[in-house]
Structure formats: C-alpha cells, structure tokens
Length: 342
Ligand code: ADP
Ligand code: MG
Image (cartoon, rainbow, N blue to C red; front, side):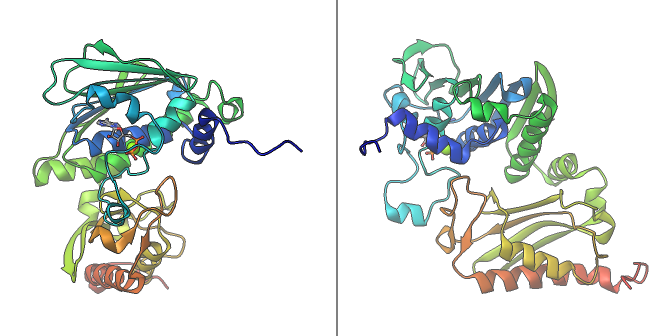
C-alpha cells in the first residue's frame, strides 16, 4: 500500500465538487444563489448546449473588490459567516465558501466583477484549478461568472450528462423555483442565444400573482387559497392549491424555509395530513408556501447541497403547518360541490 499523503488542493476541490455539482443546473443554483446573496435585483442566465458548453450568470449585485477576487474562488473562503455563532444564525443562501472553488475545479472558469464604489472591473480566470492573475476588464457594477466546458476534466461526470433538452429543463425548473423564492428579482434565461424566459420583478399583488402563474400555470391563482398566518415566531404565507389544482405528480410543490427551497419529511408529512381528507388517493397537491422563522430555529448545515434542513422544534413546526393548512382547506371541505373521496 502507498504511504499516507495529503491530497493536492486541486483534487480536494474536485472531490468537494462531486458532492454539490451534479449537473449544469447545480452550477446555476450555486451561482444564482450567490447573486441573490449579493443583493442583485436583476439576474441573467445564458445557457449553451444544456450548460455543458456555457453557463453564464450576470448580476447587478454588490460585486467583489479587486483584491478579493482570488479569495472568492479559494475553498473555505466566504464573506457570509465568520464564526460558529454566525453559522447558527445564517440567513444567506451560501455560507460554505465552497461553490466557486468547486465549480472552477471542474470547468474553465472566469469571474468578472465591479464592486460598488470602484471605477474599474477586474477579471480572473481559473483553468485546471490554476488561478490567473486579475486583469482590468469592462463590466458594469455587479458580477459575471462564466463556466465553460463543465466536467471537461472529469470524464466520469461528463458521461452522465443527459440530452441537452433534459439538462436545460432542469435549469429552467431550478430558475422557476428561485423565481418564486425571490419574487422581487428580475430573472432572464436564454438558451443558445434565444431568450426563453423573462420574469419581471413583481412589485404589487397583480405582478406577484402573475409570477406565481408563470411557474404554477395560469389556472393556479384561481384554483388556490391565499394563506398568511403567524403564531409564536412562525409565519406561513403563500398559496395552497384547491383539490381542483391537484396533479397526478408531485411536481408543483414549492416549500421555502427562510427563502430556501427545501424537501423535508416533517413538512411533507404535515402537508399530506392537512390534505388527507380533501384529496383523492394518488393525487398530489400543488402549493407555493413560505415558512419564515428565526434562523436560529433551523439548521441549514445538514447537507452540502442544502436541500434539507433540521428544525430545532420539529413538533411545533409540524403542528403549526398542519393546523394552518387544515384550517385553510376547511372551506373546501365545507363546499358541497366537491366530490367526496369515497
Ligand atoms: P459562499 O456563497 O458559501 O460564501 P462561494 O464559493 O459561492 O461561497 O462564494 C465565495 C464568495 O465570493 C462569497 O462569500 C462572496 O463574497 C463572493 N461572491 C460569489 N459570487 C458573488 C456574486 N455574484 N456577487 C458578489 N459576491 C460574490
Ligand atoms: Mg455560494
């Protein structure tokens, strides 16, 4: 057997990338979340060949200071937390300081940014894990990240990429979920140079409903109930689909915890129970729900991709969700025109 040696940093990043960067849509998720954390009001996503050739994200956020560009792509480097206490209260989408290091280790990567109060933008390129020095560039305030030839140096992953159409569909789905998470941000998606989705910032009730309809389908607003209920530090708002909005697949279910889309057992159980006596067996409810609570009440550091969370007070959260949704749906149970489930 070989002797024990520390791994080279480049390989460490590639191994970390393996956990989070599964396919092009995972790159888009990490980059758009960075743009959101930077306070962007407008985010453009350009895709070529399902993302395997190019993923480009442009934002008008706070930008990165020239002397911090190289740090941004270093692993375990982040501006979002600095202590264990920060981690316990984290409200940003990112905090692991891993995404740019991971992505840049498995693609040809560039980062161009002009920070607030800077007259010049700077650009750095990373190729095969090597960071080239920052050079002045043209860029309005904000940040652009370009990811070319994803997995060019990880053939095993590249082989698992699906058809261009499939990968693009994953990206589109992801963008829809982010667009519901941050309704006041404008999103633009283009595929091989053609704009495919433009989501204008929602500014009032009408444009908010319009954004919900763009993601959930035009019928959804009329087939759903608005909920908005707060108890003891828990706030649930959004739209629960009526039985008429139910689907044969569980593909229209968006549940956000402090702005983060999550898949959670406790949540799923509470929702299922609340719908139990208004939905036929085999039908799946459609909903867009936002749970807000003190960040200290929820652990987001459960999984590298952050799809999962752990509530400190699981019972409390479960019962609050169940009661709120059950109550909202009670109106439909009272409606005599609804088909009975038996
Ligand atoms: P994390 O998001 O967990 O901090 P990342 O590797 O995704 O880690 O990003 C590293 C750092 O680079 C961030 O903490 C942030 O300071 C900076 N950064 C990345 N993307 C952007 C962006 N679009 N706008 C401004 N700063 C950014
Ligand atoms: Mg990040």
